[in-house]
Image 1 (spheres, rainbow, N blue to C red):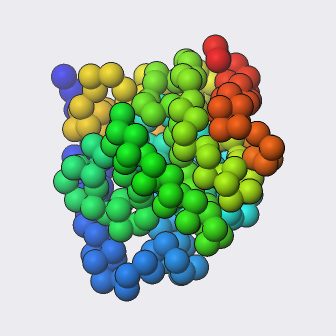
Image 2: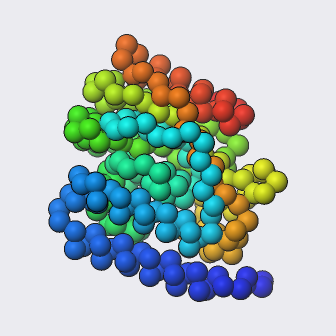
Image 3: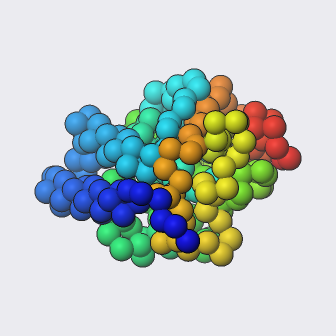
Length: 249
């Protein structure tokens, strides 16, 4: 298979960008990347740099509401994280497997990511407590409530448990619709990261597809959390996102 020109150079740039992020995180004072305006700005710029190296254009509709807010989005790829992180600051909730990724897992933790063990109710309860604490500190939390990624043609059921911190803290919930479209407005096959895909192979596919598609991040109208159950809030926001994307809810 012919390797597109520049893919190796972009891989080197990506590795250098990751090392730079690790150095910044290692030298920064404790919690500086999450609790200070300068720190959160650095994280946003790092995410934008990552998208630039991958050659993924960022297209935005609407804007994120001010913190504190629970920002929830459909999940297509690990690229969803830098796409959202390039636009708003907050604590991502991510599956514990990401913590094992070389360097990237540690870097994400330094930037405020909270890891959750899927299927472990006790662990999810601990994460819910930390989410509520962050919201009460006027910080936002960014969540992919499907709990897994898809090919972008469906929006799976939202797990309701982690909507409870928004209700308990009385903050707004902002749905976000994410999709990866080529210049014709069609879903690009290189973007989804799901099923049996491996990170190295998926990353190489992104580097080879540089410039072929854009990530569209659409910030939708916020939902009031008070007076709703976690299940009702999960179902409402899922329907809103699926309707906006025009996919089967």
